[in-house]
Image (cartoon, rainbow, N blue to C red):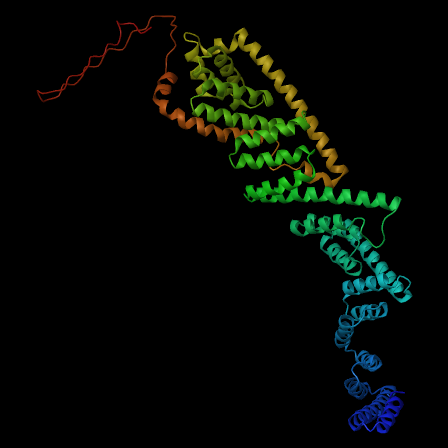
Length: 525
């Protein structure tokens, strides 16, 4: 048809005596006939299975007439027969970039991506084809096949995860996402796997993608599907908070307290009604010696869960720490009051009573100091410092008389009753925590603590804090030693004082003056 057209144009040009135009039309007509011959040759070679020679023929024809798409399509068929899918892909991509995109071209490129095992790109091309032509049956069939393969891989990943084979489960869910990268549920599941494998950065990325994809899947959700999408988004947000918390716990264990605070801030922004997040952030502030920030977080957590023993333990520790600092700053009255708050939250730690006894004695609250010294000796009878303090506050009384008096017995009953109530509350909360862990493993990170919640661990923390007070007590070590060796003032029988030893006189005549020391009048009472 093209050759006839140029032939007619040549005849008309000759009649108009336009030699240049006539020559151009003759050349064009000749090229058309040459292309026809080349294409016929290529088709014969292709039918004979000689794809390489056929490709050369079709390529020559396409070079002669580059704008004629059928010649390029024949070259594409030869490349496909030769298995050169990458060259086919470049050719089709060039058509889509330079020409008008169509559903058929997108479907063709999707098939090429499938041959190259590029399933994600295949999926996106299929979706592009369906957006241009929703009734395209070939694209719909390919999309359905991709979705079915993805769902089978997802089920296999779930089975592997249930068997504890997390790495294999991760490989299966990655395959599912290659075949269907728009499924929010797959990203949620893979994020949970990453979280269990301690790859928190990848888990956070997947949960964010899951939240973004909720309601933006293959079809807009309606009715019940919309409710499922909302529940899925809520689950993704919850998992994101848990991952931030787990990541913060890992940073805390490595001493990266500032990074842990940043992560917990992100978690708290998304879920402000979870007391465990404030507890953990308070622990980070405590490790950074930011006592007031830690106290503020613990108090917020207490408002959310006033019966939480873990919060009470931390409040006791932070108030004890603040009391030690006030004691070192010689604010003894404030220190005693702060130690009282610590004892209110945790009455089972002997160090708190000892600290309050020392602060009360410095603040001239002698009666409170006596009672606290008695409490310390009830819990720790070997505490020599409290023995010395008690004997100094009650001169003329022996230790056995003091500990057996009615006041001491009343103090012991009251203290033991408070400790018993505290221990019962602690054991009750502990049982509830274990039941929650059995019911839902996903809540483990929320209830996880950055520091140990055991009261014994808190006692050890208080013992470490005691060193701050001991450094100040070393200044009065000589005086305390004299008090420890003090003899009782009461004496049932007279005792003779030891004869004073004669002082040796120096040989030199010039000797320094020495103050004379008197040792009594013969009786040491």
